[in-house]
Length: 308
Image (cartoon, rainbow, N blue to C red; front, top):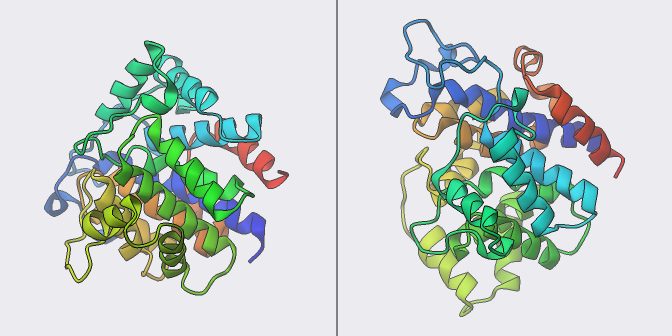
């Protein structure tokens, strides 16, 4: 599979996963329709979330991922102030949102944007307490891994800073870094990409560092069993994406993500970006690609990224 097939698959996979999950958000897993009924247009009996939003519309997840990609391409580096301005413009005027309409905003992201509007330093705008570990920085970080040409250490540093703008706790930063390393290893055609990403992180942050301690006590506790959930907690989202990507096709991955319930668009977005990268854009069902809205936002960015 060539690089273009993978890159397109990753970005479109993220956006399709997000858009597919939008109508099912806020529903418990037992309320989600049967697997074969999960489509852009839910069954008539289902009480869809965001009822006024046309099918095929990506949400804040996709919009913020495109804002990050746009910032990276414009600046040639991760520039926290430029990225922060993009987030404020999204919140205020719908920058990178489909039809410039914002219909879903995470609590922590909204708080951080209010801080940014009060001229708080971008890298200090995100909440840093333990209860500020929603998945709002993980859902958008994926383009960083596709764009980045620096070392693994530099990729981790940028992933940390990208998170800090809205989610400043170390746990959120580590989840973003691991996800980026995972995507990088897939692009490098490494056999067990996730395991390689984890090993890389542990070589950089060896036993005894605060980062390693956070990893082995809070994110992946050693010898601990945990339930796969579709919640808005950043750790749940990363764990779900890893579990989901053991499945055999893009469609199976994103539909199973939505079957978990709750934060369906974000779980499907995070897992879908990785799945699209693994399987390529041609593996994403045409019925979803053809009905994905917002091409005027994402197509120019994909073209620019491919020529980068």
